Image 1 (cartoon, rainbow, N blue to C red):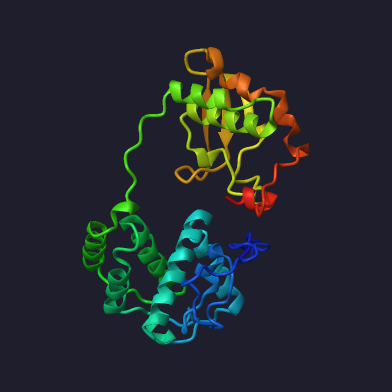
Image 2 (cartoon, rainbow, N blue to C red):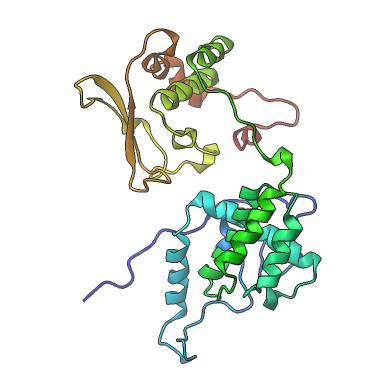
Length: 308
């Protein structure tokens, strides 16, 4: 007999505390959109009519409320926490726009093509093309998650988003940056005090990500409280090994990356001079970080600094 009720991890934060809305981005009070952190909005903000236990003919299917709730959890895992957070921001902006136009809740989902085109057009000039695309796909994901039909065609969406990108404000576009070189690293090294645990940690992170050609986000966490053993690298994920040429290297087993959810391995080798990642990682001052009190500044608490 198959087991149909295997436990699943929660698809949203259980402890995160929502912050006040930013000025101009507070939605009208509604029981359908409770105040919660951004990563939870995709699931917790509900349309007037959500997924129901009926088939295409409108006939009731013998599916329980618990089955529907489990469906929401499974579908939510199609998006990474970072994507859900971005989509949560987009969903907020969409509802604030609808509030400004007095769009009733029942017209927000399913959203008509004319509503979505008006939403994109109203936001054009205020956001970058990439940001606005994320906000558009947030509304689409919200429909998919809650079983609402999506009527806007791909051609209409791409045409509107391409127009919004062409009209994006110049300040929203990043200028090309110079290549990250050993000379830049040397300048950073000379500006740091490696006898200070924070500086030692920053330099070790820089050396590891640079020489392993890894993304910075694969070796860091957004805040001290957001560490997840199944997602973030630990000391136990570091080992000494040899590469395919027989050279000694330090390997890092990343538990999860966006492009490799099952995890992947990166590594670096010992280098000469101040650019040696092995020396940076072996700095004994790294072991004192947990016992070190972070410096404070007026109006800047320890947790506020870590949240940046």
